[in-house]
Image (cartoon, rainbow over all chains, first blue to last red):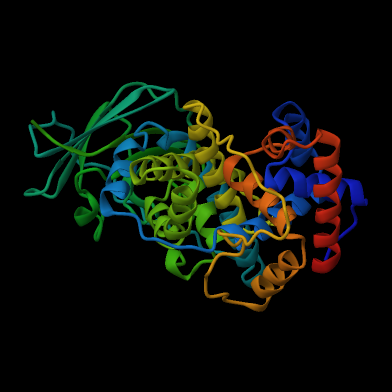
Length: 235
Length: 182
């Protein structure tokens, strides 16, 4: 046991875990949980004992409880979470690139971006639509499953010449797949890369991240996610 | 990416903090029976326990990033949330129990402290054993604190004992428990 606490602190942690402390004093003890990891660990240990003693039962809740929870989840916290995830991807990408440099001095940079759009034309009406919003600008995405075509429209995203805006689809597994770069023009049409068309379903999250010119070198977002939205059936 | 059902519960919570709804469903699948049982124990009606469980998982969705594996198990973290949400409900309807607690040791305990459950592992057996070494009245006080959110002051009033007496009595019991568990 990592019992570096003096006895009175240990007992305080136990009192807090069992709920014995009067509310006025409990607040100070709870603040100590944040500041003092050893105290926090002691509290968690005692709370674990309390659960073992008093909450060993198990009963499967009825299915409508889960349905009600899902209904109450917010729809608008995606941007913050994707950026948290992007920072994790960034660390993974850094580790991977260090490993790559270690094995090959002359590394080959493979970009898997789709070619730039050959033509620019206005977006026709199509079955799936998403409006991606965030701090900078907005992007509209229309997907026509029959034609397997993505129509993209956007305003000024405030990009400099050294960065590209990359579009991603993030299905329920949370793993982003690139849909290619946003065309430099305000509107454009691209074919979804192989394997991604089936992911463009209702409620799939779309996101735009800011990447090095030419797109993410890792296949995952490496820069901040600036816009998100969800696909919905048009009309 | 590793499938969420192969991850430890704490890692699944990490995925939840990043907005992975599959991971959220996995936490629910693994933890909801125990947390629901806890809500049922603390609240009067199934309806309230179901609403409590909803509150618990919405809290999990928003605060999963605050779970820190260095500070205890994921189940203890989830249990803390469940107990706190249940206590919120008890307090909101001002229905915190205030019925008297009998401390006479020779009275048979109608509701034994240790749940009649299959004790799964050695650690749980040890915790149950150590609690069993305490005076039955002390066991009852600790149990009441946990389930009713009864503080020292509440316990003193419900046992009609002076606050100082109750405090020192429970503290002695906690020290005995700590020594037994060490």
